[in-house]
Image (cartoon, rainbow, N blue to C red; front, side, top):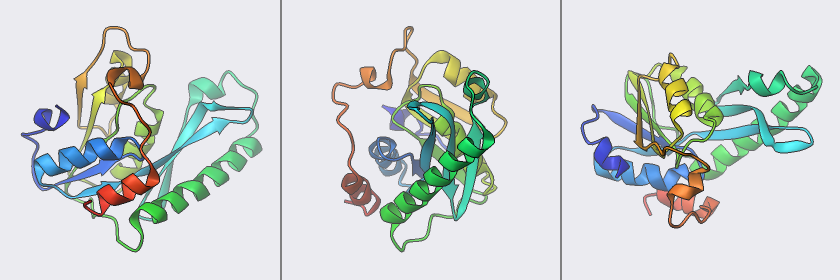
Length: 202
């Protein structure tokens, strides 16, 4: 369904999936567009003691790291810059290790002056996608298109307003959004091995 929404996208295009769940979606889009598939690894900066609550996110592209702070969360909690930096260092190390694990010795697809589609299996708050977009924008692409199967309306509005996002495509915006998984009949977690297989063309 998402591939059909993107059928008229400009070429040359590069498709980037957010591991792990975004990669199977991105693989189908890349196949439909006959475009190269790659990953952009994003890590959530979980609040110490409440790791499920994101105080930000980091994304890695071509050796660089982009950090997004969730100021709405940080304004409501007592966390020192030292604590933030400690979490940040750990997550950056994890992101770089995952990137190397997925891609191996293969270089990342060049993004400069190309249309870049950044794809996930859905959006909730959009913080990880914002980090991914910020990292991609540093590579000076021709355009950045965010594409997802499902997302809440307010997140779509916020991302469309982001200066680095040239276009946002969402196949379904439910009237009442609860979770990304509610949009899927099968929301089984994607494994690292599956991600590596899809990137290898398997």
